Length: 111
Image (tube, rainbow, N blue to C red; front, top):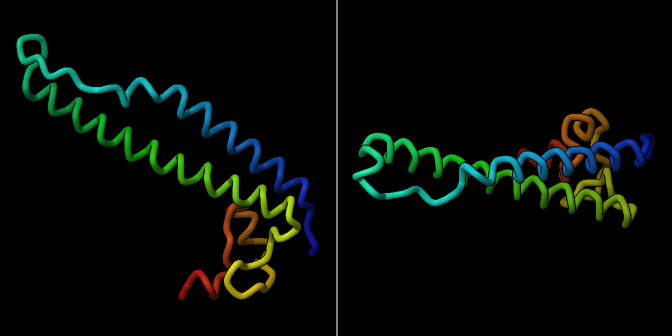
């Protein structure tokens, strides 16, 4: 394999730390919405509910990305990083540069 695994490990660890920091900071927007109509108007409450739903979806996506990063780090440890999980062929460096957590080659991803 013609690339530096340590560089990919550092990128993955940095991205994981970044996501965790963002998730920690964003946890406030996922709090339950207050339904007391005497304190908050109907439109404001609807906006808050929509914002909460968007925050939960964003958190779900971040959790999935953290899971992908953990899997990529495990693949580095197991010396399987950079190989397609479907066909076993080497994943092109440009594809790994774009997303170090990717697990399939272009051909298998297209299937």
